[in-house]
View 1 (spheres, rainbow, N blue to C red):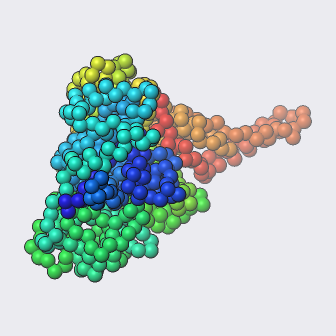
View 2: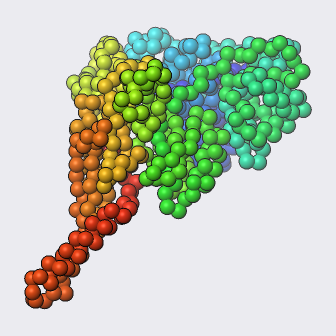
Length: 597
């Protein structure tokens, strides 16, 4: 155990975690030269395409020091985007140390701060790594000052490297061996292991990643999960190097995988404790907080896809993504679909893209919303995830919406623009301090619903890409919110309804109806689009009908003949409007996302 080191790589998005893990794989010869490629651990097509890590990746490396001593290094590469913080928190629980990668051209960013606090909560040893020092525009001195000022880490602890060129990367593993303590635990004690990740393999069932706290685990052992008392026999234990490698045993302090022909991933809970079935009186390890879905959206099959295909695809996807929640719902306009809960907008985008690519589905998605709390006149508290679930106004006393605590780090030259944006999104100022000569650290309370749509993009464009943003859910607060219904030819369309702040209702109503007019195609009859609050119309637009020239065949002749033809056309249009069904395109459901105020 003295020669084992468990560590992960954490950083803000795009600071070079995956590139650094590639270099560590090269140094330890874990991957043959002919198999080496960029982003080795990012196996998903989407990860490689977008250049981001979506799922944590575990790999065991073997390293010999100059004295010939062999060390086993268990490395976990983690995602950098705020939507996947849950992946990071689980990975850190399986480690004793972490490499904190900081981009020397950008300095300490919001997610760097959030990840540092996560690591400190888990009592990990942090090794700061200043990356990208090969770039001519690096600001190493400023970045080191920020690291000392904001994170409280002395500058002499930092390693100066360039993951892209490999400069000084060879110093990292000796630093990990010297600074990160070996894991604790006793192989002689009863087995106790913690599950920190799992995924489904269609050939081998559920594959579970565990960290062995005490005891020994081997093939043939009968194990038990403490959360639901389910028992299984182990078929295989092993490690990823990065390819799966079976081992005879996994001992205390080691990180590895186990397979036990588990068919249902619902029986495996992340954070659960695994022990031998014969053991009694084992106390469960403290697990993780369950991930809370922040954003909700409806997924419906469009033409060419069936509801059954969508259900199967979502079930398969939830096997590999425990933070995705789903329940069936139906809409008069769109038929039967699913209401899904996501950790954020990027998570929603990734899930949608995976469903369309991996399962060849054609989807209609509704505009995202958040979870509101409604107190009824009887005193009951309801949690609603879509505007369609909101009761009639006379049936509830108040609506509360989720608020987040947002951390924003921005250069001071863009401060005015950023503050204006925060004010327009109903932000409540909490704290502002200078962290260095030209960078400002802002803390604001914001309604989550205001951050959903284009907040991140607006923040980046107003600050020329320099501002960074991180948040965590704080509490629920009462707000004057109303449900804005969209009616098409007097018929309310549930999937288009939105919950908005009372003061913004008129503006949003006008913008939404205007946007709908652009995206709903012209029909042979008039299409009336209205925005209404409690059946009171506050905005209206009309899509003019396509007209057939019924007078084309009248060359001269009496006016009464022409009038007769026009009257006949008028009656036909009236009847058509009454029975005509309007085909609403996907763009109409996403119109709320593109509102420019």
